[in-house]
Amino acid sequence: MVNVKVKITNLREIKDAFNKAPKRMTKALNEAIQKSIFTIERQSKINAPVRTGFLRASHQSVFANLRGETGPTASYSIFVHEGTRFMRARPFLMEAVQSSDSQVQGFFKQAVQDTLDDIARDVG
Image (tube, rainbow, N blue to C red):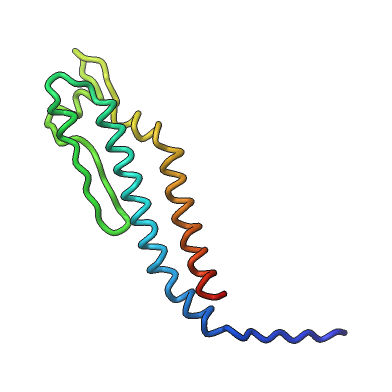
């Protein structure tokens, strides 16, 4: 039997880096959420049908820790989006979400990769 002895010389740095990981990941994910929400909001405004411009202008975005929301605040926006028995649906927000999907996925992949790279730099 061969005995192999491994000595980790920078164990303290490794522990410190991993202790900082949750905070760093949360920050990176919040940034990815913000980029995603603004991307979807921009596309939704482009997609929104315009009669007076109020529907397009009424879009708002709200953020909290690891959370973001966007959408129009016009009282009639749901009727335009989902349609009524008198009017066909024009799902401008859902289309914005769907068309932004690959870009949003990229924001999150980059956030995770950047965080892992930061941790690796701290250990190295």
